[in-house]
Length: 113
Image (cartoon, rainbow, N blue to C red; front, side, top):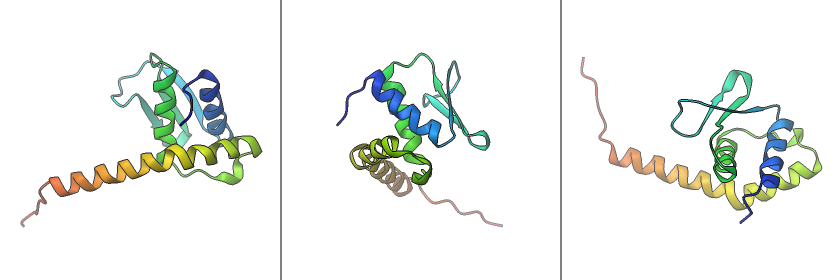
C-alpha cells in the first residue's frame, strides 16, 4: 500500500489537475465526503477531512471517472499506474460486488398497467 501523507495527497491532486479537474475543499452537506459537479469537472471535498479521508475521497472519485492517460505527463502517469494497480482496481471490484449484492437483495418490482 502507500502512505497517507500530504505529499501523496499533492501527487493525487496533481493527477486531477492534469486531467483538468478543479478540487475545492469546502463545507458541504454531502454524506459521502465529496461531490462532483460533472459539467464543470469540479470535485468538492469536505474541508474538515484529514489527509487520509481526503486521499480516500479522491481515490473514490478517481475509481469512478474515465482517466485519459494521454493527458498525464510522465511522473503523474507513473504514479497513476501504481495507484491503479494497488488501489483503484480493488475499489472497483469492491464497488461491483456491493452493486451485485444490492441487486440480489432488492426485490424486483413490476409496474402493472
